Length: 531
Image (cartoon, rainbow, N blue to C red):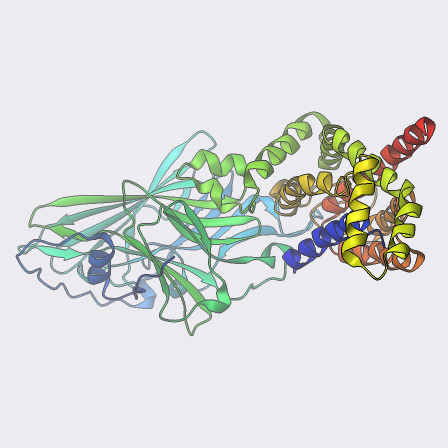
């Protein structure tokens, strides 16, 4: 919806100025399933176990009654872990709410009532570890202070003597978590297998919030960010070899597993009949001889898609913010937005400042554009004569018109090119404002209390439409009355499109229109004075 609206905006701009100037009248690899893990990891990583055949290890029988929860509280979030699979059932962020008002509930990134659908559950067929296996926790509850770092460990041992110790290293500040598997073989035979960490996510949002406008599996591999569409997922899944990180994301928040020292051989996302999406993170193939121990480490992230916070995590996690084709422009614009906010304390004012700066930077282009259109307008009577004179000979008419342009040193596309140059900046700013979590629930003034949400009373979109009418009235045009009436429909179309756009984006467009009207007034006055 947003992409179609944006394309319509840009095409309308190009049509308006262009018409005025030119016509004066991953390759996919086979998807792994949850079992068997060893074969999948071996294929994805290229690691081949030793010649000695591994001894199958039967998984211990477990019951749902053995499962219990472990609550962890930090300044940034509250998390509930389950002993079943050493998984995560619930994670609530303390600094973000679902709605802008003070009564809004805190954002819940993970919310599974059942341990069987919890995220980060562990499994390995080769090691005899079943996803329903129940671990033994080191503590029943844990509180982590602001400057503290504590560990929560879950331990499971198979009947054959294979011990899996799953350690979460939790910090009091930030949203990053270190997750380490410590494996030890106290049995009499060698065992081999790949570890699987199964991430889960609802196939449909359980709450209707604006952040779910876009959501689904995301993966970063081979320097490419891939966002899978939920509707395209199948039970067979889509697999990616050796990703740097993989997880799930919505418009503003991200859950991801990051590889450490090549700890992810493959990831596979699929849908399930239970209405749950699964992202299976598979480690390289592991072989443990009797008495041998090995570790596999990951980093986890459950938090906001804030550019600075994501960048601090490493592994190019900031690429989870999809800023489009012009990310190289969008990132500095987003950084500028945050910079001015530090001094103004208001993102709406920061948007206005950035809009003014962009107008100043593009003033020479704007001046050239309107000067060219003004000169074209002066030539309109002569062009009308030439069209009438050569109405039966199009080639002769075009030649005569081009000679007229050359004589008066007028560039017919001079009014269009400056606008084309500004389109990348428009795209970049659109992305920066549309997907910036900084604007989420950020108040401006009066009735606009959420710059990421629409104007509740549609005041700014309507005023924006009025400014577009004024701007068109002031813009030099060579169109006939019928064409001008057609072009006057543009402000109406724009107004309806912007009714549901984030008010921060509408604010930018409105301020930009007001500045353009002011520029046009002085440019027209200056040109008329020289005439």
